[in-house]
Amino acid sequence: MEVANQADPPVCRVMDYGKFKYEQSQKAKESRKKATHILVKEMKYRPKIGSGDFETKTRRVEKFLSEGSKVKVTIMFRGREIQYPQLGRKILDDIAESISHVGRVEVYPEQEGRNMTMLLTPGKATRRQREAIEALQAEALEMEEALEDVESSLEVEEEQTSDEVTEEEQDLETD
Image (cartoon, rainbow, N blue to C red; front, side):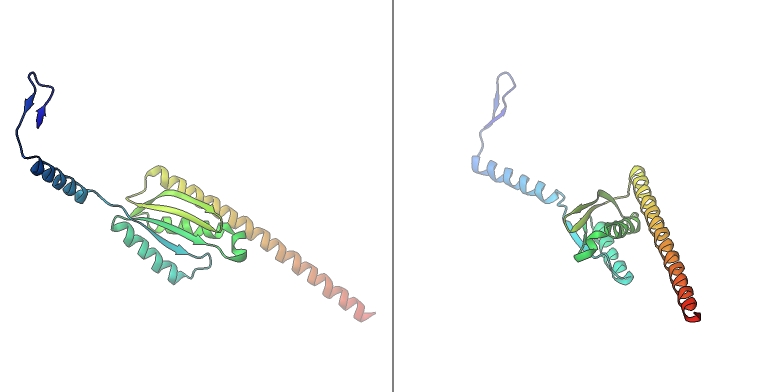
């Protein structure tokens, strides 16, 4: 068996080839044993999830991250829920915020058909990622406020029209 072919003259050693192959396979086996095998676990949520279920599932996500696994968080939309992706994004933002002490967002939320997914990885979030999350949360908050303003203006209009209708009914009754 050639040991150092670059030397002048080349250096060779006489050895048992079967023993050499066995030692090589043992070294390869040992290196595979030491290699880190990262699992990707998945946790599924729904847009109308209750607070207790949310807490329980989020604790499981924290446990998976603390064990060193990556976690794929999926929001499953059914029926008309698909028309309100902001609900799913809010849930994913809440999850990212609650696990920020054990993990960070690797792939930000994205819509894939009827599912919205986000990938979390163990380790603390970087400053840039925290700022991006805060910006997304601020944007979601602005959208919620705008939606509440529209809803409140609709309620005011409905009250005004119902008041006008009752006034007209009273006028008709007096005639």
